[in-house]
Image 1 (cartoon, helix red, strand yellow):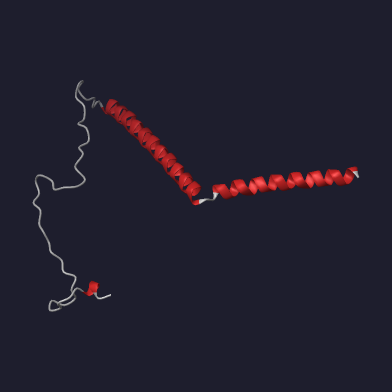
Image 2 (cartoon, rainbow, N blue to C red):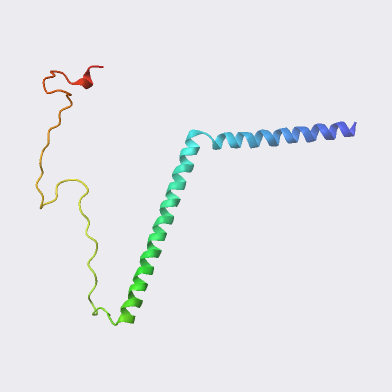
Length: 119
């Protein structure tokens, strides 16, 4: 009798454990959870890339200082390189002219209808 009770309890415990594991895994595989995981990984990758870029930049500055010192090309005190210029992503630049080009979707110039509207 004790043996049957032991195995029944062990089976019930294994069933509860397996059900809990399966439910956790199913919650991890929902679209919302997968999207959150992907977003977290993208943010983490962005932070790593930023750290890498900062490390490269500090290494560049250090190496330039070493080379300048070795070659005797020390910059005068108080003179720094200008900062990077940023241009607008959209809109015309002040020194360029804009031209307007008109495109036609007709295959033949005599066609009265746009072929894209036929279907």
